[in-house]
Amino acid sequence: MAASTSFPRRFGLLLYPEFEVLDVAGPIEALIGLSQRGYEDMKLSIISHTLDPVSPGLNDFGRAIRYLPTHTFETAPQLDVLLVPGGVGTIEGIPSPHKPRIDEYVDYVRKAYRGYDGHEPLQYIFSVCNGALVLGKAGVLDGHKATTNKAAWKLITPSAPKAHWVASARWVESGNVWTTSGVSAGADGMLAWMGSLLPDKVVADVADGMEWQRVWSSDDDPFAELNGCEDVLPE
Amino acid sequence: MAASTSFPRRFGLLLYPEFEVLDVAGPIEALIGLSQRGYEDMKLSIISHTLDPVSPGLNDFGRAIRYLPTHTFETAPQLDVLLVPGGVGTIEGIPSPHKPRIDEYVDYVRKAYRGYDGHEPLQYIFSVCNGALVLGKAGVLDGHKATTNKAAWKLITPSAPKAHWVASARWVESGNVWTTSGVSAGADGMLAWMGSLLPDKVVADVADGMEWQRVWSSDDDPFAELNGCEDVLPE
Image 1 (cartoon, rainbow over the protein chains, first blue to last red):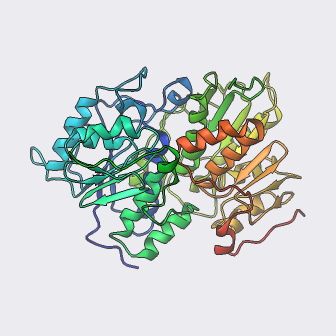
Image 2: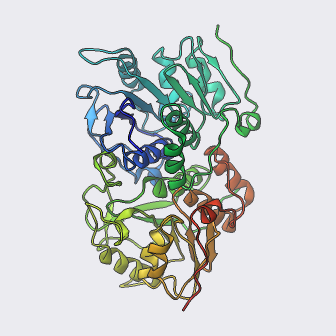
Image 3: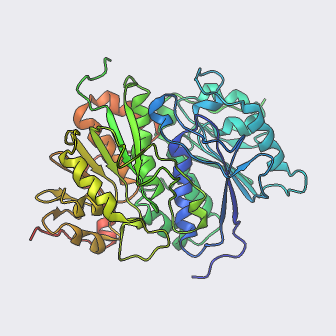
């Protein structure tokens, strides 16, 4: 099967201290799988506030994991798609030892989404879990439907009072803004996003290669009820 | 709820070039979740043949991801549990550009499992996907039941002719040897392993924190049939 020529190729991953490991790895696993199935010219840039190693988690166990960024905000290349994972690092209401200066990340997301200094606007932005909080603070969710992590629903939804927050959602598609629920939902959302642009057979091959038992419906979400979440309408 | 004092605390992750991202991230996400729920004294060591960054994937897209190891084989500390992920890097039958010298990894696994030079034997060894191939070559699977990635079944199972390879298995528990099917099965297997040692409520909290829609039965495995896999009995 010939690769789609219109499929976006330039991906960026935003990485901040205390990110959540699986928020990153679910969508990235799916994208790596796609890149090995006829989309070899896909590019990935990993963007952080410095080039120092970035660690997930709140304690020494998680911090044994260290990712190396490839770019800073200043050197970030033109992107078509930006992935914004979640993690405790973004939530002011949860004390944590390695909290990043999240405003720098919010500024970059705002600029990247709208275009800046010779960079065209993003074609798509995609958040996992409370990555939606960064999108919310950047104004990206204004006038959009969105979802986020269900356990931290009440801490995150105030970040975007002009969004319609959808509670029972594994993921939400709203124009070029895709948001997913917590952690593992990122992989289902990414497969759905691919499915919106590529033939079903291509996406099925990627998912089967992951032995991923997909959540097929965007509103199949037991965690909304488990956590007593309800929709939050825009102000 | 008080943390179990007998639960093993010293975890190692074996990391080699061309590992599979989600093979690592699924179990590690679950373990990080546990470490933040009353098991703060858990330790993680990331072991590779050098301290150089280690990348997954076969092409430049995946290789933008770079993990930093914490230890080499020579400096690896005493471990209670060793996690061995899969990845194309271990499969001789699949050509790939960054193939590691896998014999070094096999030697380390053999030594670590049995104990060596002042290191006690492992309490548990846990493989994801074709990480089972490394266990097989190290002799760890001799006389055990095991499973592995279903798409590469016929390339992997000859690595351990004295094992009983179980085809329809999301994961297999065989004494202190746990093996899982491909990629995302690692998280289900890890949650099952935790469940064999810890109260259900603790494991449910970890899984719900991941918003993970668990596969509850070890024999719930549509990918065995999809790939036409059958059990391979020991010679």
